[in-house]
Amino acid sequence: MARVFNYSAGPSCLPEEVLQQAALEMMDYQGTGQSVMEMSHRSAAYKPIIAHAEEQVRKLMKVPENYKILFLQGGGFTQFAMVPMNLGIHKKKAAYINTGIWASKALKEAKKYVDVDVIASSEDRNYSYIPRVEKVTGDYDYVYICFNNTIKGTHYEYIPDTGSIPLVADISSCILSEPLDISKFGLVFAGAQKNLGPAGVTLVIIRDDLITDTPVEGTPTMLTYKTHVEGGSMFNTPPCYCIYMVGKVLDWIEKNGGAEGMLKRNQEKAQLLYDYLDNSPYYHATTEKGSRSLMNVPFLTKETDPEKAEAINKKFVSEAAKAGLVNLAGHRTVGGMRASIYNAMPLEGVKKLIAFMETFAKENL
Image 1 (cartoon, rainbow, N blue to C red):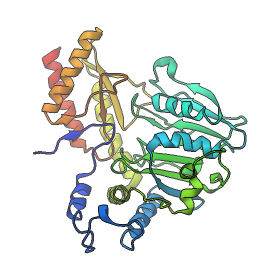
Image 2: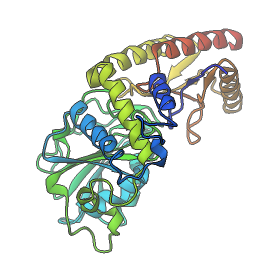
Image 3: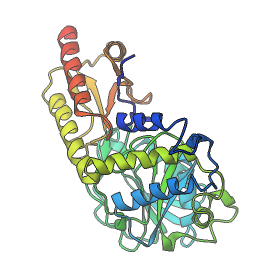
Image 4: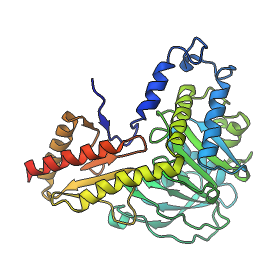
C-alpha cells in the first residue's frame, strides 16, 4: 500500500527516512543482536542512545548549561500538575494566559495546587488569536503559556516579558519548528508526538534554580523534577524506544538545517496554504492574521447553514481520505477541517491538499 499524507494533529507523521532507518535496525541494533525495544535501560548498549538524544536536544535547541533536559512520561497532562507542584511553592500563586483548550486544562489543573490568576484570554473571540501581553508583573511563582495551540491554530509571535518571574511554556506542537530562545523561559515541555517522535515520551527542559527538593506537600516521588534529574531520566524504566526514535528525528532535523532549516521549510508550507485559504471563494482560515500557527491550520467552507456545513465537512474528510489525504477532520470540539503540517510533512503534501481542495470546491459550489 502506498504511503498517505497524514495531517493528524498527533500522533503525527514522521520523516520517512527515520522510519526506514528504524526498520533496518528493528531486529538488530548496531550488531547487538536485539531490538532497542528489548534492551535494558541500564545496559551499555542503551546508555549511548539516551545520551545522544539529550546531546542533540541541547545542541539543536541551544539549551544553556544551567538547564537540565529530562525525558519523562505522562504527556502534557502530567506536566499540567507537575509544574504547579514543583514551581508553585513560594508565593503559591501563578499567572496563566488562556488561549484555548490546552491552556484552559492546564490552569484548571493548577488550581488544585496554587491560586491562579488568568491575566489575559482570547476566549472573547473563540480563541482565534493570541492576546498581546508585553509585560507581566506581580507576586507570582511562574507565568504559564501554551505557545502553539493545535485546536485553534494559534501561535505566539512574541515571548512575553516576565522579568524575574519564571516563564513556563507548553511547546508540544511547535518544538523545533523554529528557533526558540530557551533562556527566556524557566521551563518548557513538549509531548513527542508532534515534531519529535512517537507518543510515549515527554521532553522537559528546566532551569537549575527551579529544581526543588521541597515541592507542594504530598507530591508523589514520580512527580518531582528533582527525582528525574538525579536519576538521569532513568529513575524508573523510561520509554526506551520512543527516546531512540526522538534521537533519530533530531538527527534528521540537524541534517535538514536545524531549527532554522525547519522554520524556512514550515514558512513555505504554511504560506502556501494560508494564501490559498485567504483567496478562496469557498474556504476560509479560522485563525486571525498575526496569530497564525505554522503547524496547525484549521479551516471551514463558506457554508453557513450548520446542518449543511456538517454534511459538507464529513464529505470533504471522507473524499480526502480516499485520495490519500488522511486525518483532516477538525477537533471534535470545533468541527470543520484542520491540516497539521508539522516538520515531517513535505511541501508536496501541502500542494496535494490544495489541489484536492480546489477540485472539491468546484464540485460542491
